[in-house]
Image (cartoon, rainbow, N blue to C red; front, top):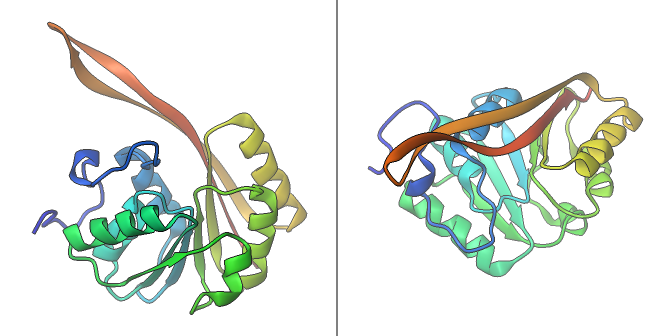
Amino acid sequence: MLWPYNTPGIPDHLFERLPGIPLSKREVRILIISALRMKADSVIWDIGAGTGTIPVEIGLLCPNTKIIAVERDEEVSNLIRRNCDRFEVNNVEIYSGNAPECFKELSSTPDRVCLEGGRPIKEILKAIWHYLKPEGRIVATAGNLETLYLISEGLAELQCRNIEVVQASVNRLETRGIHQVFAAVDPIFILSGEKL
């Protein structure tokens, strides 16, 4: 087994990658998973699933959850499937389609949603809210100020409750030449809240 542990935090290099396709860094994934506050039998939508790191981590941690990973590109969807196969994760359903139009075609209504990208982000957020079960949680990430503003504004307009915003800055020790230096991972904002 590639990751024989009962904790999140799979090293980034263990995932198969494609050039230009984003990967949520290990330390950020841990924060996202914590913010989701999953239950043993949650139904989770991961919108803009990218490399599939979040579905893999959740699939291993919560084998009785149902995870629906949404990606618009067929090649990226295949990458998610390959990463699920690498880690022997069997509870991920992968859907290739454009958000938010594809939401009506998804097989289950979520009580947890991870929003990791997409345009137009605010419209996608509002569409997710329509499907999210009462008392459900949403976690959204923003890598720039404009996206942070749009998600924050959207959550306020939806009257999302118990909103939390965390700005994660991670530095990793790297070897460069003969020296070891701390290199910054791109900072990211993690927004979360509840539908009451």
